[in-house]
Image 1 (cartoon, rainbow, N blue to C red):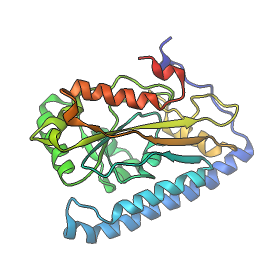
Image 2 (image 1 turned 30 degrees about the horizontal axis):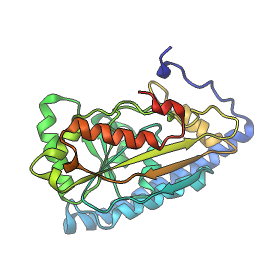
Image 3 (image 1 turned 90 degrees about the vertical axis):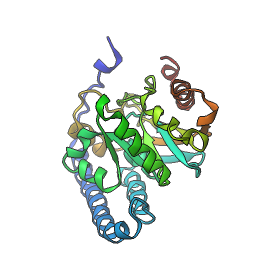
Length: 275
């Protein structure tokens, strides 16, 4: 049986769990969409003055995402520091919670598949926070590469999930080197760095190790409800690894391999060592 065909057993939610889910969901919704409203109002001033540069609104994104973990009752820890040099960030992808966890400790702009832009609620948040949307279409590769270059030269740290999909949060899939090609255009490789980041989820005591993992055809609603209803939560840790100089790697495949190895090294699960 392939790993992604086996989902954790369903969690039975008690009456108290439903109450927790309702309260946490209400508070989280108020914080998220209240923050979004403030962000959009501030963006009306920020956009004409600064264009692509966003000196103010990312602070709102960080504050909202950081607040999500106390609301959920989850532990949150950061090891290492985000880089300040020109460059991009790559991370493993195990859950929808990654968006909150990775935004809470750094100023980044996610690179996401185009379909997300049309998702209710989530798509609005993604567009408002400066997400870059891409299509897996070879005919658009050159335009997308130019978009990446423009954003990177504007000082944005773009965050990629090179696995191309999410996992059960215990393993790392082979990094796809395609997106790394953008870092070798027009002299970018001479000046930029890539920072690998590992997202580590530790499940609630007694729960399936894949508790926070969200992958494949798993529905978002039931998974969100399960997390909201959980009485004793687990935790998430963000591990910043040493940045990699693009110039030190002769090809996109070499760079993707080095970034993948660094991300794998941060996961405590033995299964993460296997490809």
